[in-house]
Image: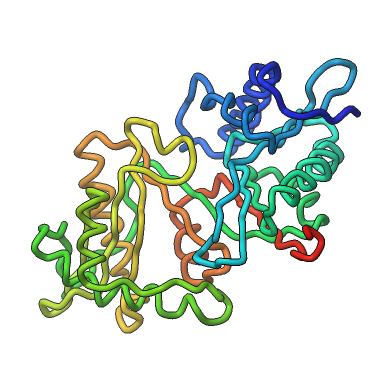
Length: 314
């Protein structure tokens, strides 16, 4: 097997492999939309961080990445390199061996670029590829999941009112958003997310053109769901797709079907607007999110991450 720098001449062959890998996953997750082509891979031939594998003159795999994210997650000492969905792939045969050789070469490039954190987005049902990255010290971090717009089977929730929130009602979501983010500094999360202010929360809502749906009990907001027009994988550009960008239910209202009914409101409302697919992403180490979303959505990506010893870079 020959490993070479990823170049413009490799884009067409790599796109063919990426499309094959997507169709392989789509065969197992029917909610994924049909696509004609994966996004253009030319930009990955220009940043010097990608590699390709060849056998007998034919490409058997490639692994590319975005430019380093400097001061990743607000950490001034950390740079992160990420290979997004569609920016890596292999032929089905010997997938683990190919990924092993690809990362050995690409990881060296990423380290030389000053990145101590390496991430790769793999398809959720690619057990062979994931097993190889786990052997190389990676662990799962994020999950992307999707569903079509048929409502879930759940009984009505007595004593609760469900509705889309008007713009003037959005500030009432802020206290719940704080509760969503507060435990993420603790175990098992260990994510250093800084809490927003009421002003920054409302400002972000306006910039994102997001929508909020909520559940009320005795007139008080007890759960919400935030809807965005885009997400973090290339299928979020699909015209009839929309994405969940945040969700929370007060603990004392869980287990009563509140969130299932709120999800149904979102599904029915968006379906009536012509939306055919709803997506969500979440951290795999969030036990509440992992347990809830995968009851109602099908995972199609697992992003894996590795932190290397910064002294090896130096």
